[in-house]
Length: 98
Image (cartoon, rainbow, N blue to C red; front, side, top):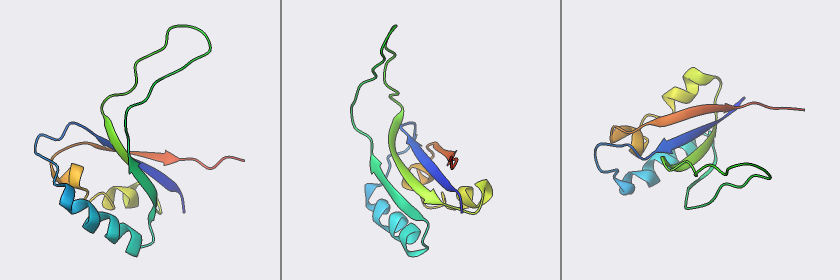
């Protein structure tokens, strides 16, 4: 089963109810799809040569999940507090290499 990264954006027009995270993450854990996740704090970009870009400021956290395909991954976003508050959850596949 492929892994996917759910990237939570900071664009929710309504306040994100932090109390809903426990229920949402518990449901993902109980279903066996939760692979990890965290809020994303401040950081920096580095590069060996050239101008250093600014960090991506519109991301607030991530969740790694396993899902059968992209359609299944989309269905696992239901109940996500950022999504439910009208914000963006970006879904990216994590291709297996090697």
